[in-house]
Image (cartoon, rainbow, N blue to C red):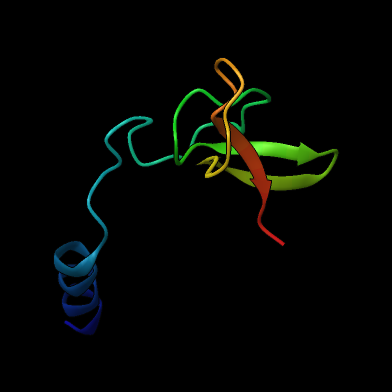
Length: 68
């Protein structure tokens, strides 16, 4: 009886099944194209793509900024 209660509790309270790759974050990019992307700031260091607040040069308004 106890095992049945545990099995029912796990079935009801368990996490929902994964919906493919939608919940997984993508690999960091080396060139930013969208604000909010994860990027490689330097080898082994993650960054975040942000919009540059100063003067922009061509398409260089979105840059990779270090998170640390």
